[in-house]
Image (cartoon, rainbow, N blue to C red; front, top):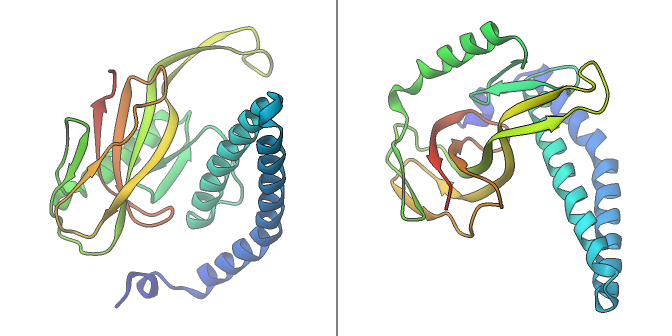
Length: 220
């Protein structure tokens, strides 16, 4: 039986319908904004002012993509709303980021399921994902991050403090697909400036479960 049918329930079908119906006007608004902003930026690039317009547009585009990813997890995990700090473990469970014991408990449960995970190796700018027990399709991602970032907090309950953020992701890039058979994929272009770490994720489509993961040193 297809995985989609195995996970089917009337309640989930209802949530999925509301998610898609509610996202339609938002998608139209995003499409209209991006087409307009990119057209204006490209047409004005010849007189220099278009360059900052394009730069701001791309930043907003990235922010929107990250927000949509969190919304997709919220729908899949049946949470009532999106929030921060949120930690999603294994693509299948979530917890408030400040609840250390609960988060470590979720990680321990996810680790116990890794007996059939495919092996991942990163060698000479290429990613090798070995064979796995499942033939269901999955995506291979690379997440580039900075291992430590210090931030001055201007407002809120931590206003005036300088806090450290660990493993701050700067880019999430799709490398290709995996169907249970060994595959080799190129990492592609260099990591974003300042990134010194990377993580390979083999994940079910959409906000699905993480089948395997591996951290590597991205400093070049």
